[in-house]
Image (cartoon, rainbow, N blue to C red; front, side):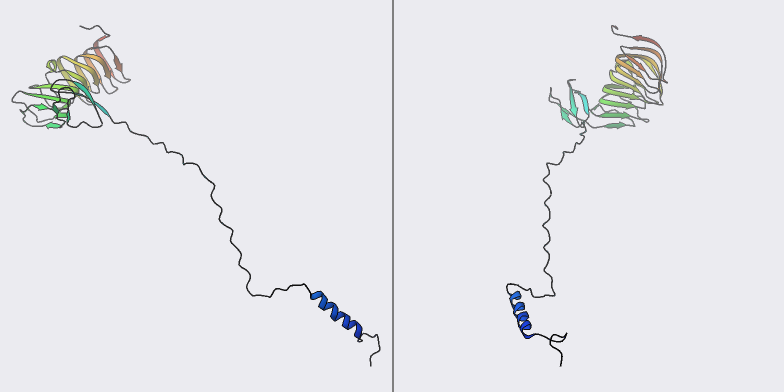
Length: 243
């Protein structure tokens, strides 16, 4: 028998007190049942984007429609069209003005009236007198037998010919690569020489000799521009007060 107080001896009173103490310690303590599943974590609410002001306006370039100066071929009233040259009515006399472009490259005897463009090419001939009225014209053939009335621009290329003294021209252009001799006095408002020109020109506004151009003869104009590389050998008169 083990001795009282030995390592294997359990005092009865102490054991009763220990059980009592353990019962009192368990009072008021809540225990949570174990579970194999953990509670789901709540996802944080997405942050609302910060309020933004109105998006900046994009600046776009607008193309300004080209403007065209039109002369009525019925009453000679001058007005402006913007955008495209199409059939129109004269604001003054109310006549309908046709804008059809015409190409003449064969025998021709009809009158032409247009606020468009006329091209007179190689192969054109005029056995019968006719009148050609246009806003612009390009000549690369002899049109001396036709009456030309060109209200805006007359461009001359190799082989061109016309009755210069009877033709009033706003802008006379000698095309690049062209060599021409014009007889008589040619009157225009503006002269542009990109090729080789020989003749007598009276320009009421200005004359430009471009770097690819050259001119011999006589020139009168209130203003003259000669580009670097151009050639000029003329009897020259610059200024106002011409007769």
